Structures are given as C-alpha cells and as structure tokens.
Amino acid sequence: AQSVAQPEDQVNVAEGNPLTVKCTYSVSGNPYLFWYVQYPNRGLQFLLKYITGDNLVKGSYGFEAEFNKSQTSFHLKKPSALVSDSALYFCAVRDLRGNNRLAFGKGNQVVVIP
Amino acid sequence: DTGVSQDPRHKITKRGQNVTFRCDPISEHNRLYWYRQTLGQGPEFLTYFQNEAQLEKSRLLSDRFSAERPKGSFSTLEIQRTEQGDSAMYLCASSLGGGIQETQYFGPGTRLLVL
Image (cartoon, rainbow over all chains, first blue to last red; front, side, top):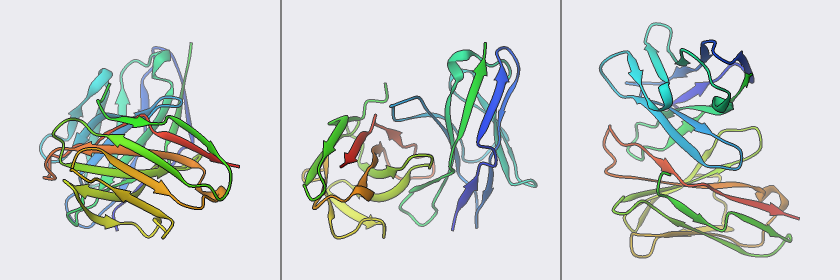
C-alpha cells in the first residue's frame, strides 16, 4: 500500500528563516506526491504536486518541494518563512489502483515565530 | 477559495441521532471524494464517486454510513444512529478527470460532534 511519513510533529522557525517540512514515502511503482496546507477550522488547500519531470516542484505562496528518489523523500521548503505560514501541513501520496484516493501523513504543525 | 462548498460547517448532535452533510463540488468536476479527519491525524478516505456512480467504499464506512450523488453534481453523506466515535471533521474533495495529473480540491469541511 502507498504511504507517507511525516516524522516531526511540530516545526518551529523564526520569521525570515528557511522553512523545511519533511516527508518520506513508500510506494510500489511511480510516486505521485502532494502537499496540502490546513489553517484552523478550514479545509485543505492544495500547494503543489509531483507527478513526473523536474525534481524541484514550485507551488503556491512561494513554496517548493524537492523530490528525491534515492532517499524516497519529498520535503516541502520555503526560503523565507512568514508568520502567516503557521498552519498544519500534510504530505500525501496517490493510490495507483484507479480510484486516485490520497493517503495522508499525520501532518506537521508549523509555527513561525515573529 | 477552492470552490468546493460544504454544509453545515458545524453539527452537534446527540448519540443515536441521524445526521446528513452536503457537498457541492467545483462545477463540472466529475469525481467527488469523502474523507474523515480525526484530531491529530491526516484525512482518511471514505468513498468516492465518478459522476453519479459510487465506485469504492473504505472499510471505515460502516453500514451506518451512506453516501449519494444522485445527479452527478452535489453529494450527501448520511450517518445513522450516530456514535461518539463518529465525532470528526468530514471533508469533501472534487477533481476533474481521474488521470495522473488529477488534483483534488477540498471544501472547508463539516465538523461533527456527537454528545
């Protein structure tokens, strides 16, 4: 079964510093990977996805993610964090059996300190 | 704003009551998904529709749960005889196509509290 792991519960970063949120995956076949962000009492907002092609994927709000096949990782990055980036971030992998369901990690709480 | 809407946003009910949630997907999106998210966890797949056909149901979806998408547009999720363990955020997502480039867009969710 396809799965992702987000090893850290919370990531604290000072405003203006680089932000990294880690994700590793386990798949049989080609990985189709996604990042979503969730603000309090809100649904998930799509940030970016890796399907094929360039290992560095650019997404919304200045976020990017680097796909690394040898390390089975898909870490989310932002060069300079904003206080407004404080939220819950989810990594997800798509099931390949035709239903395209997403399997999510448990999420990482990001706290950007002013 | 992703364009997926859900109603109600919050629901408090007593154990044993029935509840129904509605999801309106982005216009012309042919796929519609339901997920459940409990505190401290990522969303878990419940079921999905391609147009009006319900194609798969997770084992999480007990017999007390039923979902419909009668005309291939909006969908409803009904929980009968609610239990305290049903307390969660219920998320709806829609997408276009189903191919490898498919992206699911989520609604704001319905937060259910069963007392």
